[in-house]
Image (cartoon, rainbow, N blue to C red; front, side, top):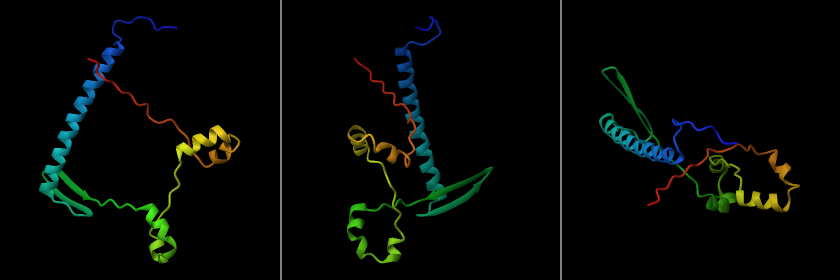
Length: 135
């Protein structure tokens, strides 16, 4: 059943245009925010790791420096037995779902899926909406 016609309800094309306009404004706002953050960080200063605080007028301004660290999982797994225990304690292992293998299991051995499912949480992700202008 179709919804009743309401002249104030935007058409799909109008909604698509509004979405594109909103994304453009969002991009501009994001670029402006990042530029302002860079200017503030230059004035306040930053530590490689840690917080730098400054008070100016009615504002307390903080910059937080962080380092991102990652591990080459394949390399460390290959050398694991040779690593001293203190180094091994620095590594945390995280289980991940291999979606391709899960799909294969679902299609070939659906009897095993409930066994795996007891260890998984499945919830809907955000719906992706893409609008492409066709000329």
